[in-house]
Length: 376
Image 1: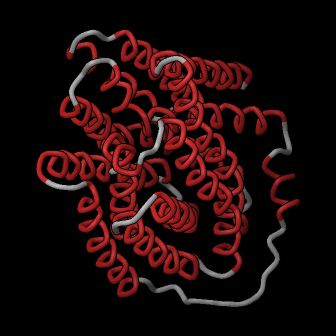
Image 2 (image 1 turned 120 degrees about the horizontal axis):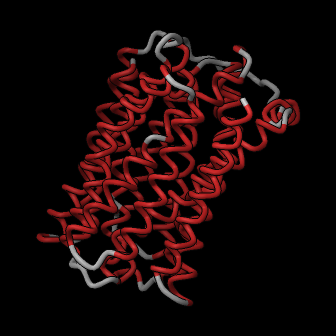
Image 3 (image 1 turned 180 degrees about the vertical axis):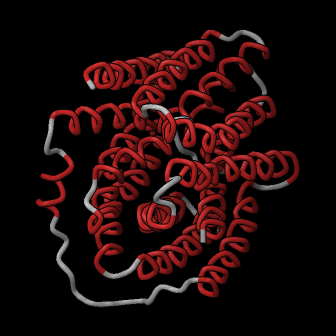
């Protein structure tokens, strides 16, 4: 099940990350401004964020499989709508469907992994989260081929096909029942639980700042490099390098956080990521682009298994996915604001100024978690 859930996450992330290197072509074809693209991606992110809590809660009260299977079906449909010929409205509708399907998928699958691997939770979540980076590498490869040979719309065809096959694997391998009945969400109780103490509130704020910075980076990093005078090919290669680093870093970071204090590991990673962002913005040559990309990737890829593990371990056993979904809803709401912030600042000033703002958000997050570790 770890294999099929990680593979599903990798494929859907591959489709989602195709949007970043293809964004200059997509905006040109659809006559979208940078701000318009940022708003569309923010809408996708907000749908993704809002879906986290109900999907997690229903998977606690019904079964994980009851939510995961519909998630697969919505995801397949979303990439069909994104890739078919049409105007802005059809493309945005596909993005909104993608946000819904990804939101249905993310919390229940993470909770299922946490259920299965209680003793090595950080490592297992790191393996699952590395699917993001495997998907990013897939996206970079497809994007490089598509940019050189054909229209961007064809890039989403292999995602639809492979995701449909993974859906079939899930149906064949799943042993949980599918249960449909009316259940209460209990939103107020869940929110009260995840913000019960000052330490919990500070952690939510720290990881929200982190997710905000990541939202801006992932959606506009290739655009930053193109605006800085680098070629589309180099921008796609640098984007791919982020995911090469992530495939290695996430399982290792999860394992390290099983052995050492999670908050300390997290704070050090955030500081490293902020340094990497600064090097990227100041880079005037390929070696510095590569150095900044590696530093940023090591630092920020460290955070994903740790953030999930911190929330899971603070939740009662019967509300793991609901609490995780609520916390991720907060994180991803902040994440959704990232591309809107970068697109707006880029239109008014420059991509460089926008990325300096993201680096400041990472530094603030590191300070909050470092203070928490020092108090412990």
